[in-house]
Image (cartoon, rainbow, N blue to C red):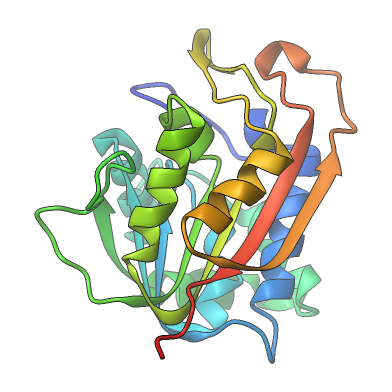
Length: 249
């Protein structure tokens, strides 16, 4: 369920990235990637859209980030920001918000530069494939994250579960996965274009992770509070699942 598709333009702080969604995502990633939390060598980010906001805490605890998206336009937007090219999306306000969550609002420019150094690749991915990055084969990662993706890409719960199984193959034994998205949405708008969404429940999310072979560490579900823009998406809640690939014996 990406907030950007095709040639549609987008500005931080509007649409899907406003209000409670951003607060939910940033807070959960801040907690997950805080000292003593999830860390490692490599993090894979699946279907980022044109965005970088969800990587701002991760760059503090991973040496290498591989981000990705299906659409060339989205990957181009990310590359533009990474290279500080004219016309790149301005993430300053959200970067400052993350720094404030981390207790260091004054260092937002250093945060941006650290993320730019940490993102090593921007790849094409297709979450409906058994090997989402083929023909590229990636070494197993310590952590995989994804936001607002599977409900937009998967036609049914079986496809959602199969995508999770393919994600598990991208992780080291004991590796972590953190998925954040929306519950029970049937549609969402990008500009004036309407897209169908997989209306998945919290029970189906939990069952899919278990069927895919993950051990759930934490599952957070909150009801939607802001219903002022039901016309751009009819989800009724937000979820965050933090799970682990079992260790080999």
